[in-house]
Length: 416
Image (cartoon, rainbow, N blue to C red; front, side, top):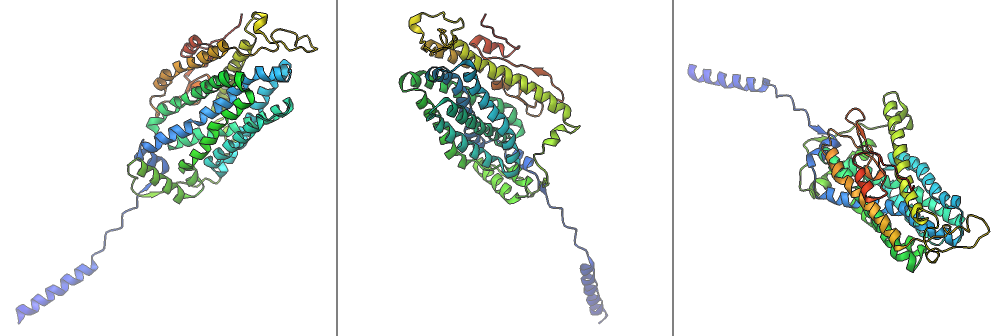
């Protein structure tokens, strides 16, 4: 009896011990940010599609900007324009670009990059088509100004592309994407050489609108920026986007829950002038002013120089079309001078010279962690900022040889 009683007591004691044993505390749940997800998913098929579609926005932008250079001689003759009237077209296009780039930037931070990109393309394609029906010079200036307003929103494509690229690949892919600008420039010059002498400049504008319309249809394959979604508190949409990218790339998502602080204030201009960023902001503004002035000024001036054949009246009278007007300027043999096939070839060679920048940019931007690209080679320069500005290489694509000079110094072209 004593033995049996002892065994029962032992069993009861073990039960009490098991009940008093505490369970281990639960492990903390893992979390990850959008940046963590982008790095974990890596580079794949989604990014190739993103590169081709968003990069093609550069084709459309280049065609709309370079269109001014190839059409200027024709509208000068058709509407008997003075020099300042031809220059006003370019001025108003870039004025619209300047004003609406600020507006579209603020709207993109509030309503999303994808929406503003779509609106800008619809806007640009619509007014570009209307330009081809311009009944007068005033209407032409107004409609091209509206086109400039729309083109300013195309930069959202570069932002979307940057926000989806892993850090390792940004240094290679961003400069490489500028080959689309080169393609757009070559395309509009080639089209102009064929279309203008045959069916006229109005049809050139209509044909140049086609790539933008095609891209509008392709935008449905590109999602909204995941960074924008989490910044507005729409974490589920951001997570769905990242999962879609991971599936397309045949990759995996990081473990845990997607978290990101919600930004209550986004896109404030005052932040640029904060003491923390003021020096960098002023430096970038000055550099971009110089780069844009040099690049766009020279490429548009190149067309003017070709139109006047460098030395006014140097061609034979048989090759020069003169429009009789009352002013002394209009009686010059240079007033109404249409581009010859050799002029288009010169413009194409000048544009091809920019290819020389590609190897240099890939070498400079090779490591996305060490180099921060602020400008791109198509805008005439490259700025590297590893904590401070180390090299500034603006350039001017006036000829193939000058295109080679882009890699070493600032080139100044003089018709004399």
